[in-house]
Image (cartoon, rainbow, N blue to C red):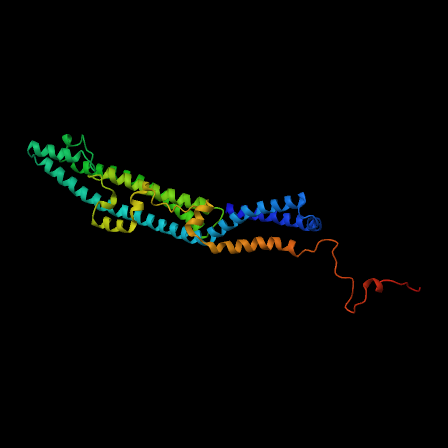
Length: 312
């Protein structure tokens, strides 16, 4: 958008520069090496260089980068949807399995086993996902279900906190996605950065919660076979958001970077044609004071035809 605005502004300046040259063409044609002629053409040439660069860059973004960037953002949105869905499904499966395990541990603990068995149960209960350091010494049959329910409620609160963050980010992603898909030139650059930040934030939130919740500190996509199968479609970019691999890294603000990325030499042609159209009026303009030969089609001098007098 900046390149397009800059090139448009420069083209307007070049138009007025050509208009200035047209008005002084007679003087320039008579004194080709006058200070006015040299200064005018140098200034026009200096305006041409940035105008050429900005016009090319704007076309490169519109024709080449637009399609790739739009597809990239759509893919990131789809992967974010899959990530949040996989996270919820894997969490529910894991929570249910650990709820069953917690009930089994409580039953074994209350069956008056050997001291070593109690110590083993207490050690397991003190680690994720249970984190019950002070519960077991006071455990009895009357509060067994309360202990399990309290654990379930605590886990649900932590999950909901992360889930709310995912929902806020996803809502923002959906809003910004429209700007990219509709190619809102004023807002597309900001929308792309916003979507990338939101997707990375979701990935980090899932990664942080799942590692702290899992007994072995594993990320959610490694909790079971079903989660691993879905993770294969996510790719390493979302599994490791801090690696930087998830960023498209299109140099949208760099003329040289985007030129080397696509190497679209043919785009120079429409830019050159635009500049040619700007200077064409100067080429076609006749210098002031220069007229056609003073004869008509019959070979008679126009001056002769214009001499004589009228009888009133």
